[in-house]
Structure formats: C-alpha cells, structure tokens
Image (tube, each protein chain N blue to C red):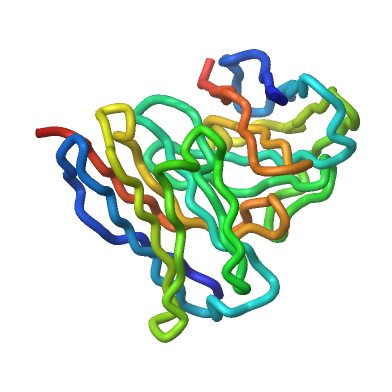
Length: 118
Length: 106
C-alpha cells in the first residue's frame, strides 16, 4: 500500500524559503507508474497544483509559481521535496504531496500546514 | 487559460437524497476529468477519473458522466459519510481544480 508523509517547518518567515519533504513508503520513487507532485490548499479555499516530477527528473510547474518552486527527488532516501522561495502570507496553506497517474491524483499524504508569518 | 466552474457552490440535502453536482470547463477537455471528495481536515480522495470510471474502493452510489465541457457527479443515495466538499479537476493537461461544492446536511 503506497503511503506518503509530508514533513517540514510549520512556520516560515516572509521572504524566506519554504522547504518540505514527502517520504514515500510501499513503493519506489523511481517507479515509472507515477508522477510525484505537490498540491496546496489555503485555509478555507480550494486546491492548487504546484508542480510534478517524473522519475527521469523531468519537472513541470504551475505557471503562476514556476519562478519560485523547485521539486527534486532523493532516490537513496525514497523521498521528494518542494522548495518555494520568496514566500509571502499568500503562501500560507496546507501542502499535500501526491502521486499522479497522468494528471489524476490517486494517493495523497495527510497534508502539512505551513504558515508564513514573522 | 482553461477554467473549471462548479455549481452549485453548496447544496443542502438529506440522507437518502440524490445529489448532482455540475462542472463546466471553459474549453473542451474530452473525458479528461476527475472528481474528488474532501472531508473536513482530511486530504482529498479520488472518486472518479476519466469522467466516469470509478476509482478502486469507491462505492457504486457515486457516478460520473459527461464529456467535452460539461460534466456531472451524482450521488444516488446520500449517506452520512458523504457530507463533504467535492472538487472536479481537469486532467487534459496539468491538474486544474474547480472551486468546490460543499454538500451539507439539510
């Protein structure tokens, strides 16, 4: 059973870099079956796809965030990561990692709340 | 840019009711559409993919239909655990979600 778990700081200061990790169990980050992605949800609002990566290292980003987001993988630890730089209060959200088959998100982590505040 | 519009934004219903939620894409997306359920404080769960295919483990009271620009999610007989927010998502290119429909207890 594929499981994903997000981890990282719950509080980030404005203008700094948000860094989150998604640890994968029950499957390999090198699998050709999935894309590995990040999705966020501001409090009380809807879902926004941030970006995805494939085992080959190819990455794809939401154009609204592309200049600030970076997704990468550590195959030795079977995890993938999100870095979002120059954060503002608008980046306060629950961040989910997920697997994607094509563009369908079929496994989700439980989510982690990140608050941007000084 | 493509936009996904859900209606209604909320619906009040009783256990046993039939509930229909609509999602409209601003341009044709074939059958590249998914539906998700999100209970409060929980991660979304995939219900339907490819507009009408039921994801593994999802009860058969959930069904999806449509193609092109107009899609529907139907819950044939609402159960207590179905009170949640539902999102559509276009999968023709990169994931883009609708604004959500909250199904509330009447």
